Image 1: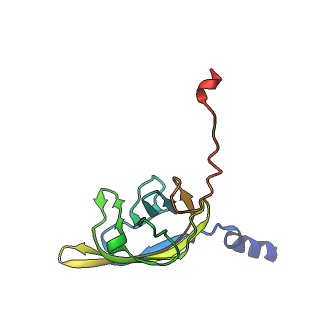
Image 2: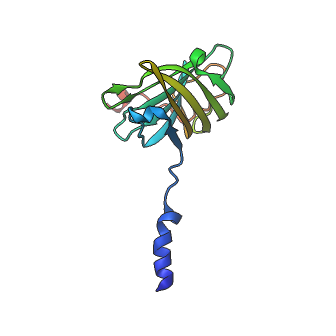
Image 3: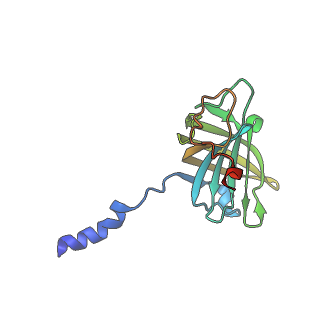
Length: 167
């Protein structure tokens, strides 16, 4: 009986899913909602986007890193003032104006489904003061379109044929 009780106490710890895909912290949380349910990473033709997403689809924090011609994105540190931005919306409030920050990609490969890992920090204008925000993330990359300069496997996008053939 004692073993069953111990197993019942430990079961939630042993069988719970690891939701450690990202975290957000900083003084911005004092007046801007930072809650999120998942992190997604998307590679578009013009930018890489890291999004902290709520169950309803709202994105309180969105990091973007611009694609620079002839300089493919790779695991490195980036200045978000010149190469990106941090935006978002929480409830009815837009995130304050981004002032300065960096993005560090520790793992990155421009292949659909590959793991992307990194961290960021930023400062935001809040009247005469500044608020801080930092975070980390780990997500599977979704390649949204073929990117020139990347060896991207898009074989998962099979031609479904002509829908008109069915009629």
